[in-house]
Image (cartoon, rainbow over the protein chains, first blue to last red):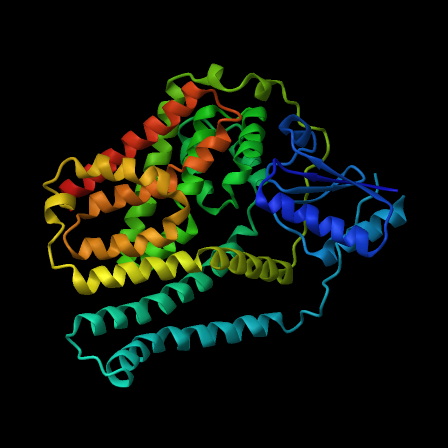
Length: 83
Length: 349
């Protein structure tokens, strides 16, 4: 089971990241919770300074940019192997 | 905690440096061909007389649109490559412990090269303040980063030349440094929203990516697509309006309202510029045409800085962490600094 968090206060780029993540999860039929984190105190717990941020199983994998679906897919695969 | 591996490149990128090299060659050829091509289409193919108003406007449009789009693509790519070597986290680490003054200068300079999007202004502000960087230094960064922005500087370079672009960058830096120091002197700490002071960043290690040159090139290319994709329509519309002004508005028509003698034109330009943020790309070509018709450089630069630096959206975003009093001071100090710069250039140039 994966927990994926998209950090960001609702800017266009954050929504884009969420879409990409949901698409990858759906395409690969993964068991995953996709959570949007929009409150700053909560976002800052991950020690990031630019949004959107992407967190997989509590680990920050990307900040301040829109990762490609291929990158997201590789991170998710790698996270599944380490669980 | 186990680390997640960075994905290997999706496609083989051995040839990437060659693609970049060929793109540069093609770019250079294209850049040198557009002027003769624009003239050829307007005057030979379409047969307009060289001194006809429409022919002149058309040649101006056909030359400026590809020129600006080529400049934007090429230079955004180069700047984005440079930016992959900087990150907000490194900038914060560097600014930590710097004295006021020195810190403001570095903050303004780093504001130019650190990747920044106004949508990230809040986490950046919290990250700076929470790590102990003074408000004054934080504000120097937050003023320089959006003001000295690549699209504005590149378009000023393309349409006004390097001197005006340089003046713009220099005055942007000075304004960011001075405004930051002034805000620091005003002791505004209590006007930062209280929750900011209570935030404790997680102990989690900040993301530390090892980028290869292929990663850097790919990311730079992504930002070219994103930025040019976002602004090209404004550029085309702006240049079309500018071309119309170029061909149809009589010389020195604007001396009376936008010239040096009209003292009120500088503050008026600043007030007008604040709400026009999203259209910076479309406004520069229009302003460039206005200058041909007698608007003065100080007024024009003040207008540009108000458009780009004092943006309504960024102010609204910063309201999440700043109380209204500090927002008012922030906007007020920058507006006064820009007006001052406008008068200064009108007097000395």
